[in-house]
Image 1 (cartoon, rainbow, N blue to C red):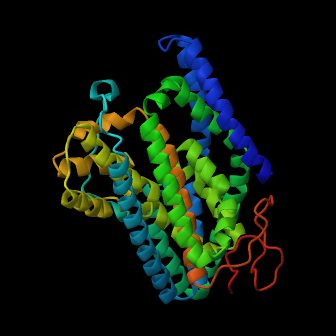
Image 2 (image 1 turned 135 degrees about the horizontal axis):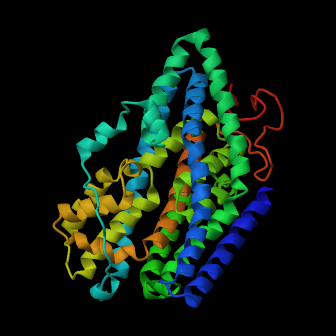
Image 3 (image 1 turned 30 degrees about the vertical axis):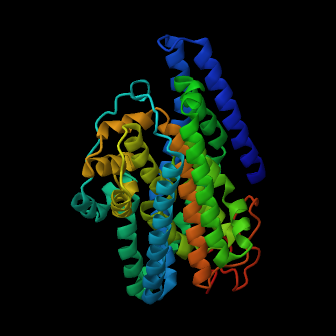
Length: 435
């Protein structure tokens, strides 16, 4: 099923572009039929995203609680957390620095026609550091679950996982319930993913119908240079991952190809999360590691978004003919290093960080309008990169901890271990593989 799913997703991408272009050139945009078709396309992707979001909160809660309960070592949790944060900081520095380097090298903003490119920005909420810090800690876990607030769910799950371990035998029923819930969510994921090709078709058809392929030509230089920069970032991340994983880093890419494709096509990291958990299971990452690393990475390790933030900030300055000395650019780099942390928990995500940075350095905030026209296409690339970056980070930390297990078949219908031996732990999920 999984081999066919990858093929079907790619077919959906191609057919989506073709269908969107046909609707765009055959119907005027003010026609009722045009609105009907674009809404129909959008409904396909909306249904899929709603189904995936339905899975995210219980999956994150169950995997972290069960994973920490099986850790049996609070020092291990602290050590993994420290190593994860260290990796995130290094990856952030590389991503933001590469964005600054490439935008200065290519200078895509020089000569931009501001009047032709701009469109209304809309309201953008100001980024407030103290508000974000307060936002991290949930005051109502049920509200956090209903809103799919991964960062708040992560905080509660850490307390719950450590607490259920502390109460010993009394907590075992809760641990078994969390394990069963995680398996249930992955089973449902398998059903939901069968709808992914239709969602990918709808998402791309809607974007192309509304904007046309001409927008890709208009912004071809910016798109090409940004995606080339993303390609270099991929090479760097995989090279650093290869230092720890060796040739297994190429195997990892094979295992996570579907989550990356889903993230790219839908421009949603959430859409890829359930499938990413499943594929990391198959790669040999114990759920107690991925259950902690993936939610943490989704909030603090968005490599593609961070590179995009520096790239877009300098692009806007170039478009307005503003020369930024190297010292100012270094200060922008340091600002983005701080402000990009927790980016996923902030409304309008990368756009908010870029806007806040522009305002901080007295650069024209209205310049954000320059990139809104093709932000969907830029978002697709940076979201796929975010998923890849978190996959590499999770695999590296697992290897660093000495917990990486032999991989299973990446295309098997079920992520079951090949045996019930202690090496592979429980049959099913990799919750107990290293016990």
